Length: 83
Image 1 (cartoon, one colour):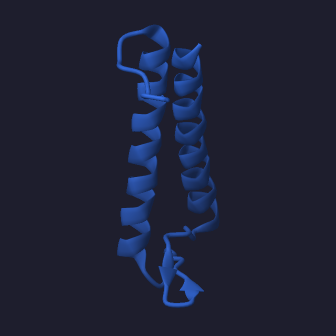
Image 2: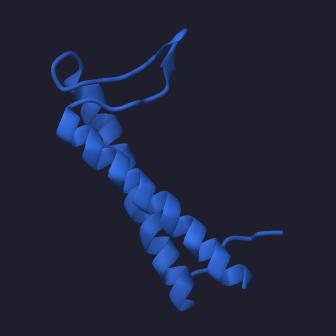
């Protein structure tokens, strides 16, 4: 049972990151933390290098978590250590 829950958590966060990246690519703006008291949102017009960096980061992390979740569900990768 613990094995399936860990796989679902990985899949949930992986797909979630891919959705955030897809929506950011459509709108041209990604949330990427904070700059002081304001949220930091690089966009294609003002900061194209920052936008591409965070877009790649979201996509890479989403793919890694999704693949790890699928492999853990199939038993080919170690599951999350949930206690």
